Structure formats: structure tokens, C-alpha cells
Length: 128
Image (tube, rainbow, N blue to C red; front, side):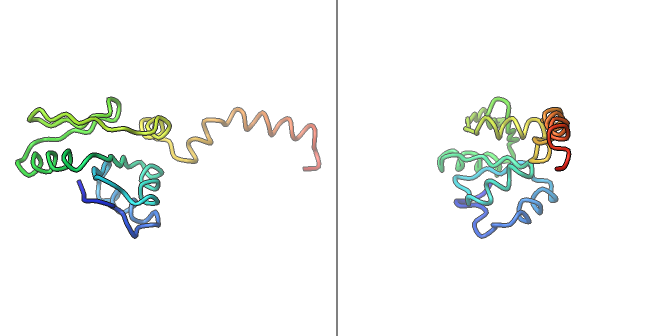
């Protein structure tokens, strides 16, 4: 969990890489720097945006030793003390995270279409 505008000044992918190497798979904050936010998704990290009052509840629960679970499928953060907070996420980004897809993985999902295109191109434009 982090404060406002988390990732500000981290316009390179090195920031999410470092957090991922440290073992973080999810960051909860009230806001994120745009480039950092996008780079999180590209590297398999879930950035969750919540309201300040929700973050305060989560921080308090964590400080008291409560277990917090982030469930991407149901889009909920649940606490062992009964806290339940829902969050929004773009459906495409959710799909990518749930299926472990990065830009290369998304391209490979279309390998059959790419192969078919290349076969047609080889026949119609053998010089290319």
C-alpha cells in the first residue's frame, strides 16, 4: 500500500521491474503516476486504485496484523476482519493479468493468423 501519486518520477520500466523482483505483485494506492501505472500492467503487477477512506481502513487493518487478500477475479480486497472493498479494472488488462499475457504473449495468441498471412503473402508477393 502506498500514498498518492505512487510511482511519480518512475517513467522507465525499471521501477516495476524492481518491485517485481522484490516480490510485489499488487500495489494499492489512491492514485498512480500514469506511465508507472501502465508499466505495472506490462510487467504483471496489479495497481489497484481505492479512495482515501478505503486506503486508511486497509492501512489500519495491516498495521493490526490483519491478513488482506486481493482477488482479481472478483475485483475485491478482503480483510480477515471483514473488510471488503471492490475495485475497478479495465477488462482487457484484467484478461492479460489473469492469463499472464504481456505484449509478446498477446501477439503469440494470434500466431495462426500471422502464419496464414505470411503464407498468403509468400504466394501473392514472392519477391517480398
